[in-house]
Length: 331
Image (tube, rainbow, N blue to C red; front, side, top):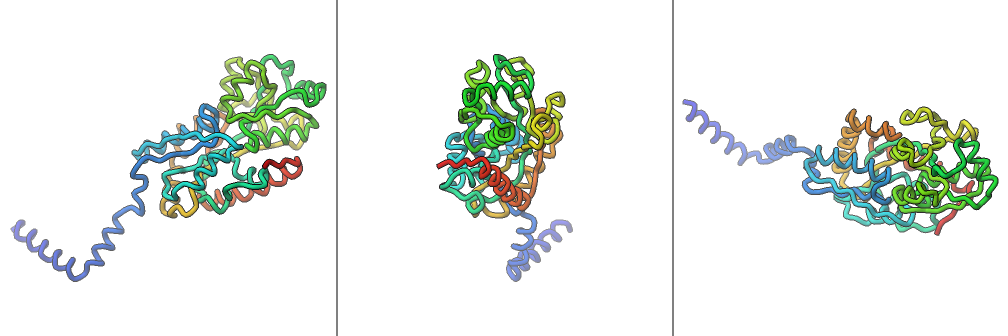
C-alpha cells in the first residue's frame, strides 16, 4: 500500500509540474537563499603595510568571516599614495563582492586632501559596514626627554621644526590627528610619512623619528618598554590604557576618534552587499572579537550599509573643515 501511494503521489506531482511549472519554480526560489555568496575566496584589500594596527584588525575580521563563510578570506596589502593605491584598486575591481576594501578612514579625508583623485569616495563604492571606532595613542622613543605631554610640548617648542612627527601615510586618520594636535598646541614639527605603522615603528624605537600616533594595538611596545606612551586622542581615556591621559586634558578642546569600514565597488549586487554587511555584523558581535578589539583600543562597531553611507558623508564634511583650517592640499 505504501509503494502504491508513493507511485500515485509521484504521478500527481508530475502532472502538477507539467500544468503549473511556475508554482514549483517559485517554491524552489523561496527555499533557496537570496545569494550563495561567497562560493570562492574573497580578497580584503588593506591600503597600508602589513603588520600594522589596521592590518591586524583586518586579519582578525577576515579570519572570522573565513570561518563563517567556509571560504578563504585573503588579506592583500596595497600601501602607498596616502592609501589611494588600495582605494583605486578596489574601485576599479569587478563589482562581484570578491574584492573588498578595508578603509582605515582615509577615503573621507582624501576627498579634501587631494585636488585630483582617480576615484570618488561616494560614487565609486558601495558601503558595506562599519568595523570599528579607534582612538590613537601618542608614542615617543625612550630616548625622548619627554615623560609627559606637557614636557613634550615644551621640548618641541624649544626646537621648532627640528623634530619629526611620523605617520602611517599622508592623509591617514592618524596623520590628521597629529596635524590637529600640532595646530591646537601651537607646535611645528617635520612630517615623515611611512607606508603603515610597522615601518614607522622600526624608526621610532631607535629614535630616528620623535613621535608617532597609532592605535592601541601598538601598546604592546610601550608595555614591553620599547617606547613610551604619553597620551590618547579620544574625548575620554581609553579602556585599553585607562592610566594614559587624553590630549584634551592638556590641550583643551582636542578630541579625535577615527573609524574603519568595509566597502566594495559600486554596482556590486545589493543582495551580496547586504549579506556581507549582515555577516560582518555577526562577526563583530562575537564576544571574543570584541574583547580582542577592546584590548587593542578599538570599539567594535558594525552598521547597515545606509548607516555607513551617512557616516562617510559626515566624515567627509568633518575632515574637510579640519583640512581647510590646516591649509593642507596634496596633489
